Amino acid sequence: MRNMARRGVRCGVGLMTGAAAAAVELPFVVLAGAALLPVAAWPAGRRAVLGPVLVCARRLAELERARLRIWLDVRVPPAHEDLRALRYVAWRWALGVLGGVVMLSAAIGLGYGLFWTYGWILVDGIRDPASIALSSCGGFFLLFLAVQGIFGVAGLEGQWARQCFGPRHQEELERRIAELAASRAAVVDAVHDERRRIERDLHDGVQQRLVALGMLLGRARRSQDAGRRDRLLGQAHEESRRALDELREVAWRIYPTTLDEAGLRAALETVAERASVPVRVEYQLTEEPERAVATVAYFVVCEAVTNAVKHAAPSRIVVAVGGAEEGMVHVAVQDDGCGGADAAGSGLFGLARRVAALDGILTVLSPPGGPTVVAAELPCG
Image (cartoon, rainbow, N blue to C red):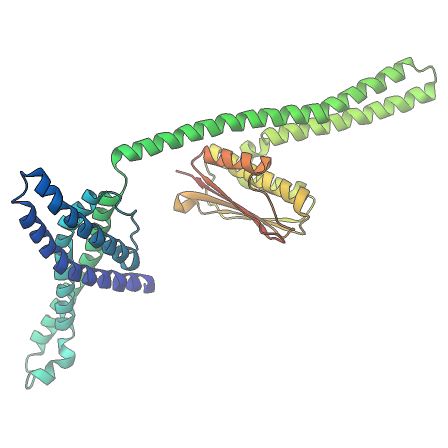
């Protein structure tokens, strides 16, 4: 309620300043039209008159941008084209007049609504309480409608500014195409990185274990000493167990079956249990996110925890997941290690590409000395 009242006051001040600006913009539009009309068919004269008009329009538009940002919390890009600024100013005065009418209605409604508190000073003896009560009710009703009108006009101000200064439809399409092309390239690169990582894990881990296992079995087969043969077979059995464990680790890093069987929360708790330092999971999602989002969230947590344990020497790690009701899943991993994480490193850079493939954003804050925070915002709708 307090925030709503504060926003209403700010919007009211914004509309009053907008009404004052309309008192300048309307004469400017009239004078600009009167100056351009006689030279409309004369190119040289039109250019001579249009230059100062566009300069004034740009300055007025910049003042309007500052007013919208300060009072209405509307942020729009600057007018890179003078004609767009002129178009904005040419019609913005109407919204300024409308805002002035709404604020005047609010003042009248407030005056009538509170008439019973000061009417006895202006009128000798208030003898009709029913009329006073009716006037007060009507005044408060008008005030209520005016408050709704304040928010409505503020919304119209923002829409008109975004329509004039925001990107055109063609520009928006081009930007979106560029984003999709970058996302597709990021997906391809992420797949290649994942394939290379799997090949490296198999070559450096499982393959070496299997080579050692083969050598032990060969030595045991050639040995003539029964005791030595038993020892070699025991070592081979132990090596096979280690190879199986490493193969399971590789499979887990590729995709954890727990994610499908028990959901994201259980998968994150498994990551916490497998870590060599204490990891606290703060899970605040009420519903399971869709599979693609859950998969990316899991790998963000898994990679961030692995990097922290390997490079930062933390004493504790906190994993926080929440925010689905806002249309975004927020994932944050914070450790109290030594900091200095490189966002351009292979691990975090791969995570950034994986997150970007879902139109998400990955941020890394890691000042020297810590703490390090790896946060991702993933759209869930």
